Image (cartoon, rainbow, N blue to C red; front, side):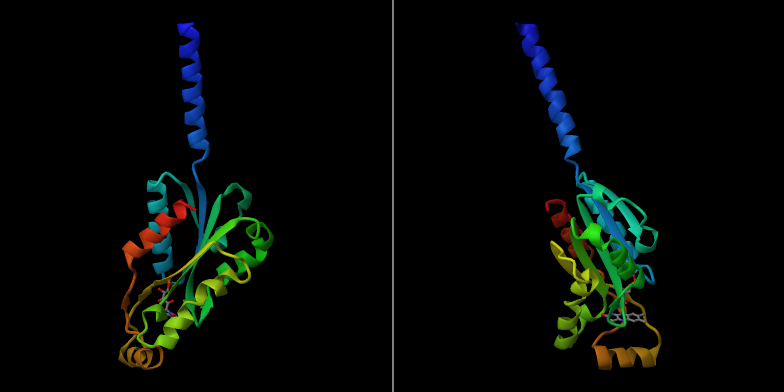
Length: 186
Ligand SMILES: Cc1cc2nc3c(=O)[nH]c(=O)nc-3n(C[C@H](O)[C@H](O)[C@H](O)COP(=O)(O)O)c2cc1C
């Protein structure tokens, strides 16, 4: 009787451990970056999610040739240039629209005007995630300040005058890690 009880306990423990492993969240982070700051943000997200026991794969949008059905969540991030998402991200969504529309998708934008002192510019920056999503329905959206290096006095002056931004690295790593952490629970 005792032996039957012990075997049953071992069986249940093994099944439970197996179950736990199989519920490990599988996440793909796809990004488009011109100068590297979005790539670094995406890398920080991967580290955060891996530390939370997620299985996270990180890829530039140009390199994605994978079966998207294997992922529980797909995070798409893009740098913004000229008010537009990175062309590789636009292409990734166009090519994979059908698969993506059946998956949980979260989107983040990396830009400068979210740090602008001009309210209109800031409000416009909040529309970037939906520009990236381009018709998809993300479960979450975020806009992060990026790295905007100085490109000379005249360009800096014009940036301040027109966009209300000053050169600098505006990446808030705590905010980025907090958003990634929230994704692990979705
Ligand atoms: C040519 C150029 C155009 C940009 N256009 C915009 C823009 O329209 N809106 C904005 O908020 N930020 C804009 N930015 C700021 C970038 O989005 C920011 O520097 C971002 O961190 C770049 O990401 P990356 O390093 O991954 O390329 C622009 C930067 C450059 C260099």
